Image 1 (cartoon, rainbow, N blue to C red):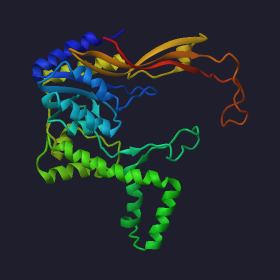
Image 2 (cartoon, rainbow, N blue to C red):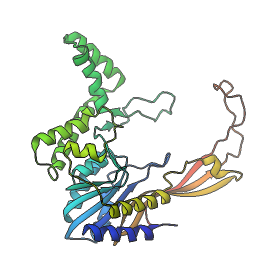
Image 3 (cartoon, rainbow, N blue to C red):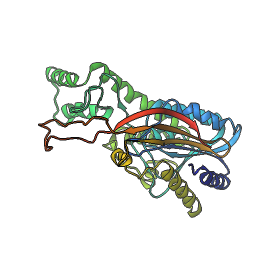
Amino acid sequence: MTDYATRKALYEQIGAKRASKVIALVNGDRPAWETQLSRDFPDHMVDHLDDMPGTEKISLILHTNGGDTLAAWRLVHLVRQFCKKLEVLIPLKALSAGTLISLGCDQIVMTKQASLGPIDPSITTPLNPTVPGAGPGVRAPVSVEAIKGYLEIATKELAIKDDAAMASIFTALSAQVHPIVLGQVFRARSQIQFLARQLLKHQVIDSEKVDAIIAFLCSESGSHDYSIDRHEGRGLGLNIETPDEELYNLMREVHKSYRSELQLNEPYDPVALVAANQSVSYSFKRCLIESVDGGSQAFVSEGHLNKPTQPQFGPVNFPGMAPGIQDQIVDQRDFEGWRKIA
């Protein structure tokens, strides 16, 4: 079941109001089923862009927690090949790589509850540190700014200048984070600043403002979780528009529709889904790319949740838990990928 027909009517109204063609890109953020911007997104965007060649203006409705920075870079340049002017409409959030996309637009339209965020990247590779207590394949992301902060404690806060002491500090760091990962961290820091500077040319001309925006988004905000509303974004020098009441209501209705379809506010509880059954099938939409002419594409996960056929016994010495049968649901994934749904 899809509510694309409802959203299509809303896209048409937004397009008429903005004198534009509308594309929506929605990364679902339902816990356990989150998606991020990845390098296959531009390929799927082409299916929608091909239906709007030579368009004067494109309005990109964006909802994302972020993802691959180079995917964001490529996506902005791709969309700009099909239009003369690009704007982004943010009903709720365009964080991290989503903020990077927003920097590459001519203007940003934000509701009162919408947020941008810092663009300082994190590196995740097979060489990253392991996560204590997690499986052997689970790796902790390494924050570019966290590494910078560690070194700045020594050089600025503690004012350490002795070469031998600094070598010891760096040796301790490299014992926790692989040297190759450290190299990638500092390359990523330079790259994100370069990408942001290039993208901002469409929105901010003053070089001092550009420097200040990049400095704030890359490090001065203090935390990757920092939230930037439209007032603060405008104060930084970004070209941010406040929607009028009609546009605000249209953006809210679009958000409510995809929030419902992707079940963004519904907790995922596999035990409750299986309940008294031995097995139950599922099909979850986790991401959407939509337009009026191109229809709706969704990233879908399908499979079965099964109860184990044999009792699974917990460890005798598990902290806080007496020995006994555990509920252990097995996820048998049958399909995962993009699918045309409307």
